[in-house]
Image (cartoon, rainbow, N blue to C red; front, side, top):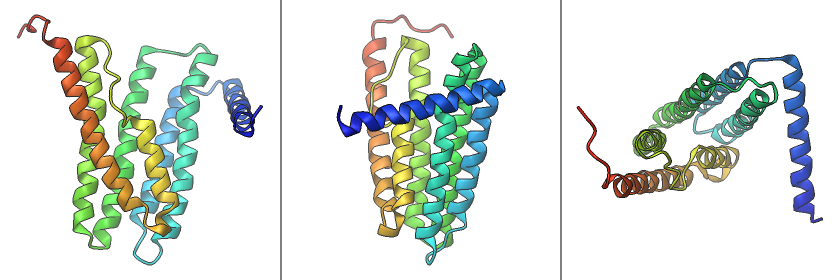
Length: 209
């Protein structure tokens, strides 16, 4: 067994223990989902209250908070399955709250770049916010037509990991290039999904109006 596999097994065991503990409380998975949103709001607050002198420290705190929110994002579905509380509404609610969690983090970054008068990055963050939503929207709309549309790279987990890295290492100026990567890869993902849906709907009859 390599040290990486051992680490993975240890993390998996710890996550299972957390899920088991939460399952015993009979807490609603939807409540866990909502708590994740509240924690992300705290991270957005930290982003928005950063300035040119304390950005490295405030972004690091925000990154740690985002990491905590990610834990709730990982366990809500597992708790639902363990307690046989999986519902269609729960899946819908999780998807909606995920969109809010994405937007609120970008909103915090908008406030930060506005406060330090970096207009270019205000526009960039706004663009990334739109493209991130479009990544999710194009998949949802396509899957209503063709059943599955999982093509493209920049899904929500990848976006969160990049934002987390940007926040934790902002003292080295990492967040700015992270935003450019998000802008480019999210746009490519949206275009890929449009192209994929086009190819898979050419043979379908037009929808009735």
